Length: 214
Image (cartoon, rainbow, N blue to C red; front, side, top):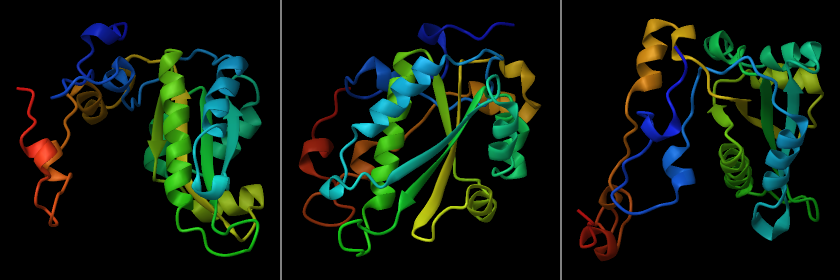
């Protein structure tokens, strides 16, 4: 069975307000096609991350990248940095990445509390650029940070952040039954009034409490 088209895919969001199709159609699959990701597309994804905003333009993000089709040995090294549960499905993704962030500012050595935020923003930019090219990204918190540190000789002031599986959409039937169910279940999110506050904490801001489009 071939994966359904984006237009009819159950993961396509049904938002309360009009947003970009790129945002509606982005989601995090576990089933990836056994298809090589073109190096030019990988470069374009990373270029999107490069131009992401960051505190004081520190650009604290770093990425390790490995392609299964181009360098299987490097790919296995990166795969070993994921927890077993993620390895089980991520091993089918043609490209793996891992993000890191620098904990201190380069200019003065002071802690950069925005670094985790900034690497997240960079990975979001990377993800949306991927979707524009019909690629999908699944970011993973489940990593072995100590293994990553040893494998890549990571400096002390850098922190492993997340794994990223990248590829073209695959057939959900390649997954276990429980993962197939999750793969095809509709996406859901909290409503705006649950996380956008006004005068007080958990007091919904008027702009969202009174702005329903439905």
